[in-house]
Amino acid sequence: MTMEIKTLFDFGASPCFIEKELVQQHKMILMKKSTLITMEVINGQSLSLKHMMHETKALNINIKTHINKVAFNVISSPTNPIVIGLSWLILHNS
Image 1: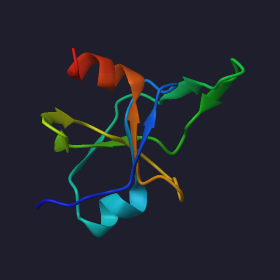
Image 2 (image 1 turned 90 degrees about the vertical axis):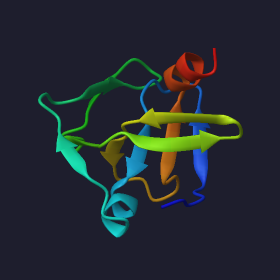
Image 3 (image 1 turned 60 degrees about the horizontal axis):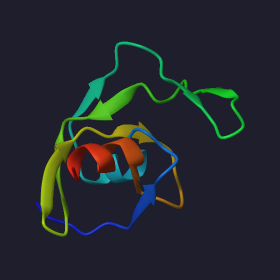
């Protein structure tokens, strides 16, 4: 299945994220994470994401001429269904 989705490229984020409603709508395969994810926000505070316990099975993503597989952390994000983090961009566009 191929679909175009509004995507935020977040140069301040390391991982990639996907909105849980999008995951449910398209019946994507999820895997439970073995550890609780803790993140640090811009002011240095730790943000414990107790609800971010799942990630998608690796999905093919296509950005212009680049096609790569990425597993997305599942979150609740009403404004940005997909967030691509900086580390993914650097790693896959070198």
